[in-house]
Structure formats: C-alpha cells, structure tokens
Length: 310
Image (tube, rainbow, N blue to C red; front, side):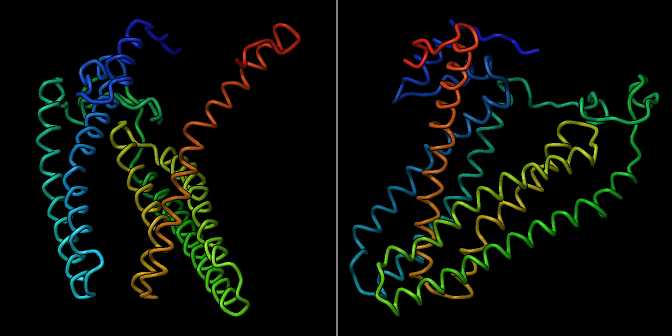
C-alpha cells in the first residue's frame, strides 16, 4: 500500500523549492514530506553544490593566469591546483560532518538505538526464536550460512564481474589503438577516433545496471538482520564494482600508457556521453513512458487515442 500525495504540500514545495532558483532549500519541509533519508540527501546536495563554488573559482583563476604560459608554469599550476583540491576535499568532509551532526540533532536522530534493539528488516528471514535481548519472537538466521554464501558465492561472482569489466575495458582500448592506427595510415576523419571511447561510455552504464541487479540479489541472499546492515554491505559491493568499472580505463591510460592526450580525449568522451545518456534516462524516458501509459489508458477506456498526449 502506498500513501497518496498531498497536493497542497506538493504545490508549496514546487513554489518554495523547485521554482526557486536562488535561495535556501526548505529542508525541514522536504524531510517532513519525503522522509529523513531524502531530506538528508538534498541537504548534502545543497551543501556540496555550494562548496563547489570554491574550487570552481580557484580553477578559473589558475586557468586565466597560467594557461598559455610556459610548460613549466603550466605543470606547476596543475600541481598546485591538485594540492588545493586535496585540501578542499578534506575540509569539505569536516564541514559536512558538522552540518550533518547539526541536522541530526535538530531532527532528533542523533541518538540511535543499538542494532540488537532494532526491529528486523522485512527482508530478513529464518527460523523463529525468542530473542534474548527483546524477549519477543524474531526470525533467527545462523551466521555461518551467511559466511558460507559470502565466501563461496558472493566473492566468486564479484570476482567474475570485475574480470568481465577488465576484459571489456581491455578490448575497448585495443579497439581504440586499432582505430588510431587506421586513421593515421589512411588519413580518415579524426572524429572516428572517438567511436571506441563513446562505445566504452555506453558499455560502462550498461554493466553498472547489470551488476546492480546482481549485487542486490547477492545482498538479499546474504540475509542481513537490519536494514542498515543490508544497505552498508550493498554499498560496499556497489562502490567496489563502480570504482573499477568507471575508472579502470582512466587509470590504465594515465599510469600505464602515460599518454596525456589520450587521457584528455577519453575523459571528455566519457563525461559528455554519460551526461547525455543520464539526461536521456532521467528526463526523456520517464516523459515518454508517462505519455505511453496515458495513451494506453485512453485506448483501453475509450477504444481510441484521445487528447491525452497534449
């Protein structure tokens, strides 16, 4: 069962949040309507976006005053800007810890119950026994079964998934090398050299989607008692795979091939292609799906397409 939306609150959030370009987010209203996790996410998103103004400003300064100079000066500016970004990232994490602690205190979530006192997750299953902590009947699942599944199923599946990623990246880079040689030998259009990079940028999110399904299935089979445990172990699985899947080609090009020009082209192709695919997935596809459902509903009710597409 799903609760219906409150139209008055939605209109208020649209006016005070979505349609407001400049101004603070109504975090309390977001938290009250969408829940604690969604409210905390948008609090982090606003905090992070605001914090990005600092490196963006410094980056523009470095580009204006050091771009076009001598090679030594440009290399020095890259090193200085890298150290600045490391310092900024560290200070940002400290700042966000303080901000999240303030929100946790004001929203009354700073004191959490112990894991043993939490109610089991709805996904948790096992033989029902009386809990020694709460004294209530609860499902019980032996830890050795979880460890057996983790070591004999989860780890091999993740290892195979990472091997598939490494193989796909290696094949794409070999395709890239072949394409570069073909362009140099036959004088073809230089834009063709971006085809392997674009294909790699399309393959990466596809592998992400497939592995997400696999990770959720593995995590569910490991059968964790609380929702926090379930989410934490799912995050471990996703971060490990997505880090290798997203950055293996960049690390290979930067540290093994040591080709800065190829690294620039690869990074540009990955960022632009994934941004376009992300916009397509998050905006155009939901809109098209909604219109298709409206058209199907009109056809089922009236036997013809009415003006639902307008």
